Length: 214
Image 1 (spheres, rainbow, N blue to C red):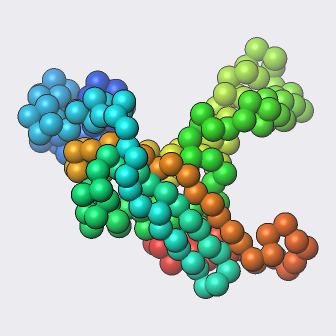
Image 2 (image 1 turned 180 degrees about the vertical axis):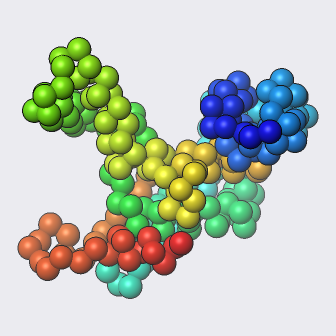
């Protein structure tokens, strides 16, 4: 039986398990949602949602430098120092530093996007839709749809994982939380690019990083 994105979303909404784990459970259950829920419960993966309120104050700060042209500092938190020393956790932190280098997000989560930035973007998108001659009654729906694309560009958790176009960074966080058994959260990052903000010849260093990651 074909496992659709809609089925995966329904299972994720019900269990808060990671996307990849939901796909595996659905395949094992031959598409039966109820059985897939039981499989995830048996594996303890739906406990991710219960960890959401926990405090993650340990973790790692890592740095990634690409060719002396792009540099990233990133902090990823875990609940215990023990997990911070876990190889899977360390690899995840490094992957996220490289993700930031390649995609240049501005915020970790949607909640961090300033209201004035959001309102400005909505205004621009609405004007674009109106200029395209779209009827007023569908403009708002168009703005909402295009706003999702805006989030995918500037919000790290909403970005598509650069090594897998079917997975978002948020899914990776949930998958690692389920695997390790502790709350994992990306707290903050800083990205530096040589000559950023200065007039210079066009060079797409972000694209160069992205190609090397694939």
